[in-house]
Each structure stands twice: as structure tokens, then as C-alpha cells.
Image (cartoon, rainbow, N blue to C red; front, side):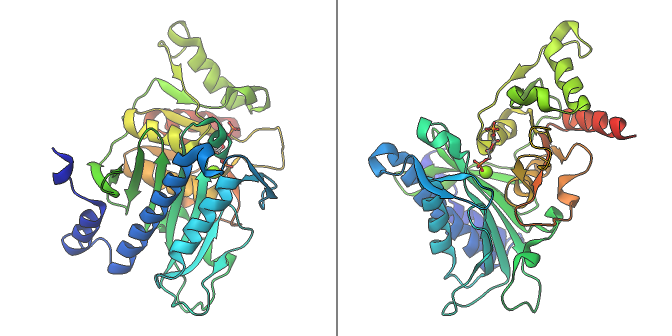
Length: 339
Ligand code: AHM
Ligand code: MG
């Protein structure tokens, strides 16, 4: 297929609205605007050192992490592009302590948007893939100015989720709960084109992604599972496994959507006050929605991520996601250890 005949994101969304009744005009506009914001972030990422956006911003976010300049720039782009459209009741982000209210002079809408504006920030300065992750929820009815509690809905309530990956090409991956679609940015035309429909994650895999340097801090079932993979052909699994760890969740998840695998960021004892590193609302939930829609599974090791009732906007959770058979196996090890 030539690039000119490929379906654009705009056409795809209009067809989803018109022919399949899956989305309404406001949700279509929301996705289009988020995609446009991701294009702006992609341009900023691509400029690298020439854009004067590498390095630290010398500020801390609510999680006590030093923000990178690009974290701040990406957050501002997403706020600026989305606050005037009339489809949002509020926005929340990894980079802001509290939800961002829609300014008085703009109309308000029915949706909540929550995002990690630049995931994998430690990779910005070394020219490795980073991304944007987002989740769309319905605002509770009758709430004039939604606060944090409005966002605290389980992942099964998401009406859409997606991520953009700024890699060797820029891609947008989306779900509305009826399959997963991938779009590649055509930089000449400036539009996203449909390049993958109904993506499926193979149930079986021989590839895992985990930060092995934390092994000494893991709990027993986690150590057992990885030791078995490392033992390879002569171990209990009877075959060799391969390992990849980009340290950008978007890149690791994107690889798993493309060729299968299991991604794990477990709870560890490095800082016992933290039940994991990744955040539920804008990392684990949207990625779990996408992975389940592609036939994979996503758990905390004990429970399905999408069923969790969030308690805080910036809550952390352990994450096990990807090829179903492996996620089920490692989750079983964790459940057995609890029994
Ligand atoms: P960030 O949102 O601050 O970039 O942190 C999340 C990232 C994930 O993208 C990635 O999977 C993980 O942190 C990597 O952590 P580590 O550096 O511990 O391997
Ligand atoms: Mg992140």
C-alpha cells in the first residue's frame, strides 16, 4: 500500500464514530488533539540538543523525582492543547501534584484526561526511545470542578487509552475497548497513518523484560520465576529465554505488542514504603487496557490491574503484563506464596 492511500488517524476516527458508533464527536476531538500534542512533543524530542531541552529542569515533581526539561515541556504542551476544547472536565498528570482545572473562560466537557507526558525520562539525554501515555475516563455526573476523587476510578472504566512512542519512528497506539490500533507519523504530511489493526500479543513467549539489578530486593516468588527463566534449557522450563530492558515502559510494551514478551516491574524491598515503581492511573491502567485488548494479561502479581480501586492519583503498583501464559504463571507463583 502506498503512503498516500493509507487511512489517516482522522479518517479512522470518523469511521469509528460514523460506522461503528464506538466513539462520539467529543472523544474523537479529544484523541485528535492528544495526537497533535504528541506530534509537538515528538518534534521537541527530535530536536535533541539543538532544541535546548536536554537535561534537568532543576525542579521536583510530587514523587520527589527531579524533572527533566522535556518532562516539563511535554506536560505544558498537553495542558495547553487540551484545556480549551470543551470536551474535558479536568486533566491530571505525573508531573502535577493535583488535577489541573479547566480555566473559567473555557467550556467544560464530559471527560477526564490523565497522562504521563514523557515516560522513560532517564533516556532523553541518551537518545533512546521515550513516550507519552494517556488514559481517558468519564467525569462523574454533576461535579462542577472535579478534584482528585473524580479520577479514582478502576481501569475497567477507561473509555480510551493510548501511548505515543518517540522511537526510530513516531507511533501512536490506541484502544477504545474494541481492539488495538497503531498509527505511524508521516513526517512529510504531518499526519498519523494507520499501520496496524487489531494487534495481538502471542500467548507464549521466550522473552522477558525486568530490571535485574533489583533482584536482591525482590520477594521469593519473583526470584524463583526469574531464576527458572535464567536456568534455560537445562532448568525446569526446558528452554532458553532472552532478556530486554529499555527502561522506557512505552518501548518495552511496544516491543511486547509487536512480538510478545512479559514486562515486569515488581514490588521490591529497596524502599518498603513503595508498593512498586510504576504509577497506576497513568502508566499501569492505560498499558493494561491496551495489553488486554491485544489478548495479553496484566496483573499486580495477585490481582488484575484493571479491577483495582485507586486510592490516590499518584498511587504505585507492581506491574506484570504481556503474553498471557507467562503473566498467569508468575501471578500463580505469587498467589501460591500468599496461600
Ligand atoms: P518515569 O515515568 O519517571 O520515566 O519512570 C517510569 C520508567 C518506566 O518507563 C520504566 O519502565 C522504568 O521507569 C524504569 O525504571 P528503572 O530505571 O528502575 O529500570
Ligand atoms: Mg512514566
